[in-house]
View 1: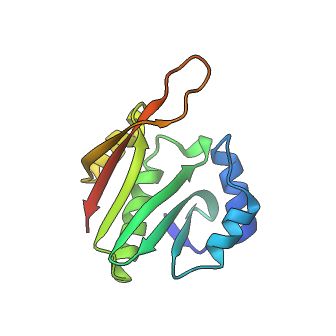
View 2: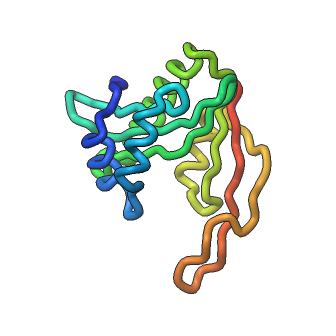
Length: 146
């Protein structure tokens, strides 16, 4: 697994491949135009793009805004390896704490973050809007000291 700096086209393509609600092109463009504020990483395995991560950085902290792994590579440790590499890069630029929020029902992500040492700091009740006949859902706040 290696980290590479993504292009606008690769980010948009990966985002569409990973999520049913991809970010707008203008959002990705604004993130790429502010490299001091946003750290963006694409993950490659055997020369193939398999995912990405986006962090908002205000030293000494960073917030994981979005991480995605293409469907065919999920469950293979890609997100774990990629997060470890990204965290190392963030630490090199002066980040000492990474924060995130995760949907309460996203058990796979919660387990991953816990295995990496993230701890639950709090909760935002009813943060994620209701979908269909499901109630609004809480966001769990987690962080990791690097």
